Amino acid sequence: MFQSFDFKHMLPTFSDKEKEDVKLYYAFSKEYEKEIQEKSLKEFENHPIFGPLIKNIPLEVREASNKESDELLRAAIFENSWERYIKHLMMQGVQYAHMGLDFKAWYEVVGMVRRYYIPIMKRLYDRESDRISAVGNGMNVLLDYVMCVIGESFIHERNRKIEQQNKRLEGMIKELESFAYIISHDLKTPLRGIASLSDWLTEDYKDKLDDTGKEYLDLLKNRVLRLESLIDGVLIYSRAGRVDTETEKIDLNILVKDVIEMAAFPSHVHIQINNSLPTIQVAKYPIMQVFSNLIGNAVKHNDKEEIEINIACVEQADDWLFYVKDNGPGIEDQFHEKVFQIFQTLKTKDEMNSTGIGLSVVKKIIDNVGGKIWIESKTGKGCTFFFTLKKASK
Image 1 (tube, rainbow, N blue to C red):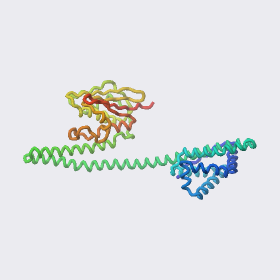
Image 2: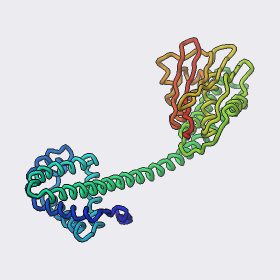
Image 3: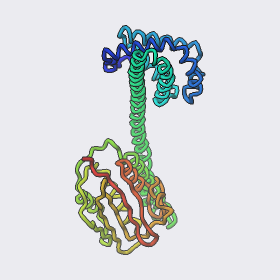
Image 4: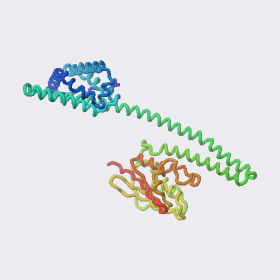
């Protein structure tokens, strides 16, 4: 586990006095080792984390481990052979980390050791004040160093686990992407065939089909087209808000106008940008998708003869607050969260030819850049979608 780990940066840099004090502390600890063990054993056994671990480790194993640790510590202190002791400590730290021990518990144990040695030191203070002062300093120097090494082992183990998880996630993402595109291709190919077959039947048998038959074929084709849109929507949702998308400075005045022009709405749709929009550091195509979906929804679900949509932005301390407001039928309070859930629509899918994915894509994009999105609306009085985008850190 630590074969390629460089221990040199972890070697202690004790001063000559600290080295001597550590030696005195080691001798002192051996002198009073039995007394400390008798006093601390019960507390160890009752510790919420250490207790169960100790009980699960056979006594002979614990004794062998303690003996090995003591031999390595002696060699480190008196022979300046620290690398083997450091490696032992780190292996011990990783072992306990796997068993559920956290760094806080280690700190409590070290605090326990200090708590039991200090009364003994005080008891001997009058007779050997110089020695006890040096022993106390040596104890603090050594235990602080031990905690640093154990802390390093926890960091090393956590980083190793994170690296493993990242590799697994990268592999899973690649597999899912490949799976999504393969499924998309394999599903859409027969769907196109069904749509074409529906057209051929309508054309070749138009004289033999009654109105009901023609209606059924149109319904079949519409179902096929909707399923194809649904497949495309799922792929868009899976790609929405990718954190690895490159960002650039985008003038949102230009971007929003481009979105409106590309949509080519009919003449009864009136879209007004109420104030100047900011230039922000953002991934271009996801933010285009946000405005496109919000404006498109405001038009698609509007029940007015003259559709009015207003877009604006307000600068706040840490972010930009945007809104897209319409004069449509509004959304009841109980549906303000539901509309952001994938595959959820407030009208039947046949009625609106909707996949129920658009707003879930918008929310996913906003969430992934650290923003928020919400609705303010009253039935019959239009709807306003608010969302925030964080300002670039200076």
